[in-house]
Amino acid sequence: MRRIHVGNALSAFGLGFTVPYLYVYVAQVRGLGAMTAGLLLTVFAVSALIVLPFAGRAIVRRGPLPVLLAALVAAALGALSLGLTGSAAGVLLSAAALGAGQAVMQPALATMIVDCSSADTRSRAFAMQFFLQNLGLGIGGLIGGHLVDTTRVSSFTLLFAIEAAIFVALVGVMATVRMPHAPHVEEAPAPSSRGGWRELLGNRAMVQLCVLGFVLFFACYGQFDSGLSAYGLEAARISTSTLGTALAVNTLVIVVAQFAVLKFVERRRRSRVIAAVGLIWAVAWLAAGYAGLGHGSQATATAAFVSTYGLFGLGEAMLSPTVAPLVADLAPEGMAGQYNSTFALVKQLALAVGPAVGGPLGASSHGPYIVTFLLFSLGITVLALRLGRRLTDVQDRPWPARGTRVVARGGAAAEPVTAEA
Image (cartoon, rainbow, N blue to C red; front, side, top):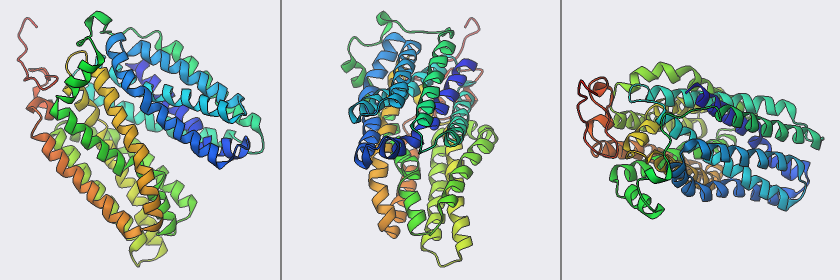
């Protein structure tokens, strides 16, 4: 588990190390223009959407570790070639390899956590994963920003070479992991990928969780770097430095609050925790509305806007030990990889659609933007409560069952643990 957490931290570090600087690298440093840079970001996202459906099936059939190692090699090759190539075609192909590799890492690492944890430790393990991911992203972005120089191509070549070296080193670390359960082809629960998808889509609770997950990522993560930032600059008249401060406050709240809220969260019904997050984010959007549409001073508008990001961080800290373990508990035995990859695919879709919808709306239609995402946040609460009615008691609230019962997977009822077991 310690090695898996190292993998989470380093993969997030690599992501934060280079991704914030992809646009300026392609458009300005390589001189390929804004259109190529925008297309690169699109390729980065689309490649993730293409590979994730296949990644889930590969994890089920081969186990998460081989899939993770393949993803790390692809990401390393993509990062290294991205730093060396100067042509538009080379840049786009490199971005596809890097984006696909980094996308597959997430469900592979999540499945490894599921296989290496029990109902007693799973919530804490996923909380640690989220904590390290945010820490890695923050530190990676900070260090990467001090290394790059837009007047020197060599500084970006060094940046991508370091990222590639991190992924290669991570291959060595993860290759030493011995998984307690690694599925083989003959153990796969269905003979075809179509059967696996049919089984997943027949799990009504999982389908509802995917719908809920889309709204969660669309209304929060999909707005951070697009609609909400555009709204803050245009409506609240905040400076870019204040926007940076707000993002830092978001990370700080997650880092500080993650384990403080863990004991509170893991003793309560998961559906009600997610419902509470919807209400917290509704308050966050009200604060954002006051920042841009109220008539207070610039100081109060700035404070309200920064508090919006802080409230989002609090909700994220509550979700990390809640949603990912729920995905694992809904998966039938041996299908955790398929379920994790599907949920990762839902996340990628939301992150692709969120900026496309929120960016223009936040920049020009300030009132409708706030009302829209206030309603989405309240929708999270409604969807979470509806999901709770479809979950079994041990899926929704596994804490009382620990020690005497096992958390059932795939919707089956829990069974008592005998003395022989």
